[in-house]
Image 1 (tube, one colour):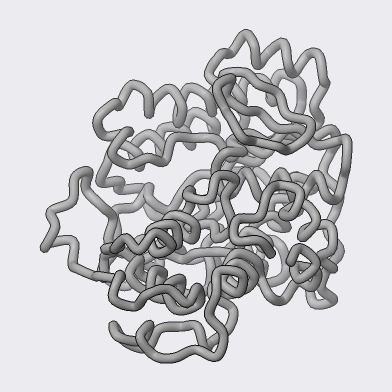
Image 2 (cartoon, one colour; image 1 turned 180 degrees about the vertical axis):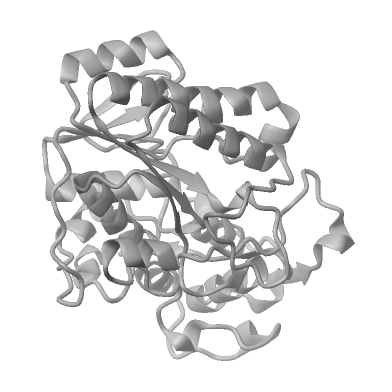
Length: 358
């Protein structure tokens, strides 16, 4: 796999993945399918996965000023323009929508609440209006940061949200607008989707690795804890819910709690980068602005019961890549390179076929 694979390589990787015998056969989503938010990690990988499975029947939305995006079958329009969105739906008669859109830039959301409201609330409401009007299946991705965190995490669906910043607040409002407008839709609260990005510096893996590649330091928090998931697993969960009729809210976090510092340790060691570039600190030492979450690890037992199987493998999958201390990343590793990091952290090793993109 190239240092930063292009869309064709990502698409090829998903096309060559085989399904697993321990997971029931997945249903097909109603087609054609529209995927929003494809400049984000979750949306980018979802588009590639679904286009690899249903070529010519899966489409994406990009902002008019998007550059360097090489995926086929994408429409350039501002997703916040309801009239343009309405015309698009009428023209192409989508049968299902996977909504991965939203502004997750914490500082930008805090400084410009109006923009955060538009992208995280109004866009969701407009999509839900259209899907309900046209009887279209809608799967919407929300986020674990609707919770501020607590010792041990383990947040369940029935616990009320308690966001600590504008991003979390607007994601909660988006969930509520969707519930009001389209009660037949499903909302999946995800944590950190682990996959490669379209521009090489979005998402956890590429952002952290991009600093190390340039020999720049990265400082991450010891006490911000999440439940990351491989995009491979999340793609298949989205497919299952696009194909079924479940309505409501579910947590879709991974099976392993990982702090931001540990994520950086894993990326640093698997990528073979300079060990001295990684620093850690407690949130109290930085007084972050905007406020950061602490432990907002999701309890995702309910989604496993709904699906009838455990849908998420732990990230990272290999136990040898799980940090055992704050200096763990300084230990030698048999293999450490950007290609190796992409292969085992950007894709789930349990799905065959990723080596085809090397």
